[in-house]
Length: 223
Image (cartoon, rainbow, N blue to C red):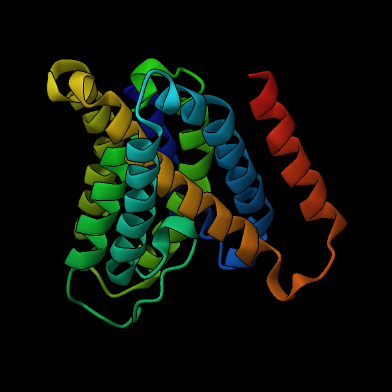
């Protein structure tokens, strides 16, 4: 299940876009807001306490900040695809290698804490679905060949399970558990807060967004 759910989430999202051909990305803003709140709450309720348990608090804090900085750095290349924005010329025929590598690294990091925190898989899955839909819309509307778009999505879907595999079978992930988890926490904090900030564009009160954000937090709490 750990390996299968992220793969299915990405591939089924791509298949949905391929068949239904949704045009309006705005329709996914509520789902993005829910995913941001859900991921943020799981990070606070699950990952933060475990990272600080029996660890040097200052070191954990440093790696959380490094995770935030790493995600900011990755977004120079992904153009914000991790939180639902793909600011790349859709008329470009070249394969978007920088977008590909930055998204793959981000997804690989996401997989590290799953083995020790079962509920995190649901946060990652709910985060991946709207992102995969928006990414698929971009790929299918661009001038990139279909087979290249399919390969992009296929490799992207495998990266989170690959991160989980590394965390289970490589010794360094056990000895450096606190620091790696702190790094992932930083990545999650940046992604989730940016999603929530962008979902409240113009700082206008929106009861529907408030309801889905509250729902995301409550569901994460009771998981």
